[in-house]
Amino acid sequence: MGQAGGKGSDRAPACIVPTSTQIRRAQPQLTSKWWALQAEGKAPVPLCLDVYGKAFSSMLEQHCGKHRSEHQRCIRSRKLDPLNMSAWYPECGEPFEIENSCVGGLLVEIDKRCSGPLEKAANAFERVSGDLQDARLKSAMDSVGQCVAKVASAKGVNPQYDAEAARRRYFMSKNVMLR
Image (tube, rainbow, N blue to C red):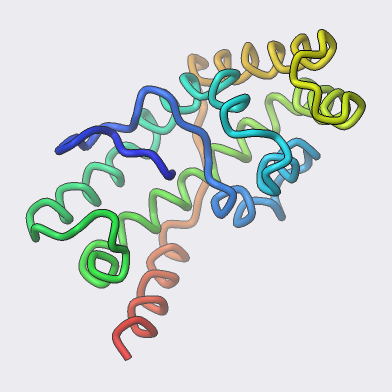
């Protein structure tokens, strides 16, 4: 997710948002225009972090944390460079792919449960032409943050994701990398 949890840490950072790649992979299942704005970099990452980064991090840790931990342990135990994907992916890529699939499931849950606030935020963002100080945008974004926080603390959130497809992606990618 583009941010480290700290040296030697298995935990997600305190504030994080999904990467553009994670959003693009989930996009066929997402309905809100907001995700395209974020994936294309039109909605700035600092804005997203401020609005729902803490709540998303909490959801990530709760639902996908075991995969992150497994990935980080693998990298540490083999003394691999976490910034050199070609070095760690062949050995440690499977939990990485499963975590990314889990993130896709989280995005679908947020999209379903927060569709109204996400759409209002997308529309407000397009109307203000990038003016991040606009009161309408701030209000719409506050609603997104409140909704994501509500989802993060809700009982019964059960992101659906295909771990087996993630494993297949890993094995196919690993085979390509090792050629």
